[in-house]
Amino acid sequence: MNDTLKAVGNLGAELGAAKAENERLRGLLRECLGSAVLPSFTEERVNAALSQQAEPAPAQDEREAFERDVNLFGVGFLVDGIRVSPDRVVMQYSTGRPAQTGQPVAVNPDPPEMIIRWYESPESVHRAMWEPMAIGEGMTYDELLAEGVTCGFDESGNEVEMEAGADIEGMRMQGCWAFVDTLNSCIHAWAAPDADRGKILHMLAHEIGHATGTPHPDGFQEEMRAEQFGRVAAAAYSMLLDKDRPQCTAPACGCADAYCMAWPDEAAPIAQTAPQPEQSGLVEALDWLDTEVSAIDTWYRGSPSYERDAGWFKSEVLRLIEGCRAALSTQGDPDAPDTTSHR
Image (cartoon, rainbow, N blue to C red; front, side):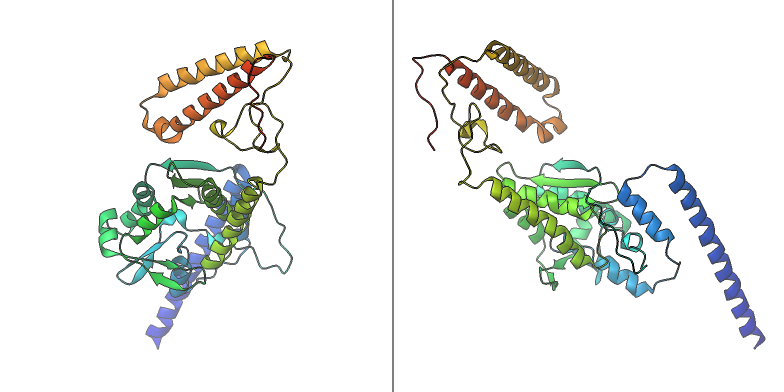
């Protein structure tokens, strides 16, 4: 009996010490919050965490919440029968869940300031997602691929397993893929050169959705919450591409409306009958822009980050310049052919 009482007393002392340490850490967090400049969504999460009572959660509940963080929008791995997911991708459900006050939570529509990092292949963005988690599990990335089982949730919430490498092949077939590091508001993405722009827009809006507002405590429902952002963006993009739009009146176009998104090689110059007073100034501006683009390309050519992230844009800018020059060359020329678009 004395041993039992002694054990209970020791347990009580340890619990009291733990509570005291918890309060000390909370105090430090409050001090940091008062002096730090944080994104609004991060501050909301910290405040939500501080408003909750510290109650130990069962280990199994922690595992269940953890394993729901990745689905077929971002697959996971089973290692020795246990599902694991990368720390950088885990939405902070424990701190992000609002305090249960019974009052409606105000909706903040603003996303945090996001950054994006582009990768050159599906394999490279896949490695970026899973290698940190593999190292945390005491494994290499290659060991994770060899020993783990790729798994995820379908759109109905059912868990499925896939053959090794099926996730990377799926990325390649889709033409684009991304994941978001919500702690740093960074999207890691890959897109094939010929990827459908609507899919890329859908993908990026989905990832921004994860970082916007309060995440859902259920991992699968959180994916559906973010997917709303993606599908709304895709629907809006589809409307912009609607062929029934009024015709554009912008020079060097004629193929779309005032929200024209056509690239220069898809647009036909429009002939005008009278020269514009500012024509000489436009020509000089185009010459200057051409020179600047060429200088930037010469300066950064060979840089891996430039070739990956911006090199492709040079040709599009030069095409735009040539399209504008072609339009200006027809202004005021009575012998110029009628290139007005009648589409």
